[in-house]
Length: 270
Image (cartoon, rainbow, N blue to C red):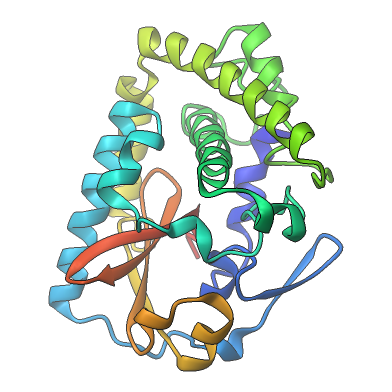
């Protein structure tokens, strides 16, 4: 069920190789094996200045996302211009590498936005649940009308075993998800769950959490990694990983003196 997907993904190890989708991983069936030798894991010290800068950047990102409920308008201001070109597959592994590599940039961005916007609604569903142990209610039913909740729950772009190999079938699924998200967003705008007392209390609680409260870590991008991933211009730099109180993690790079998001991932929290 979709409501469990966020918690399942948060239990995965937070290696930089895994966070970059399948850019630096070997895929076997549904198992992802991180090739951790490509990066200097957790050996790069985050300076106080870097910590302050990355945290401030992440806080601006979260504030905008809570307002827009849409990743698309954040892309020009927060993301690397070519952020979808580094991965061999989408993070959720719903599109085959061969199909993903053939998609033009605009379609890879559409896919990313649809998946992450659904992920945000999953986050809302999780964080507005007063009893996290109670999973008896259908996904999204607490925050959305039944027809919209069912439509979102049917999407194959985040959870399940579907791997798209046909472009037309993929784009049809993306279009259907986009329509469902627009319906959901119209309802969420009226209800404004981000301002509910329970949601605000949980945000404040997570802000004080040593792991979810904008914790910043870093890993060095080595030269071997750039050969496979295309991150040549970032060789020797740090890739920052910052967890946020809305259970979304960001992988952030310094691009010519400006912090930019490489990808979004489920916050680790461990």
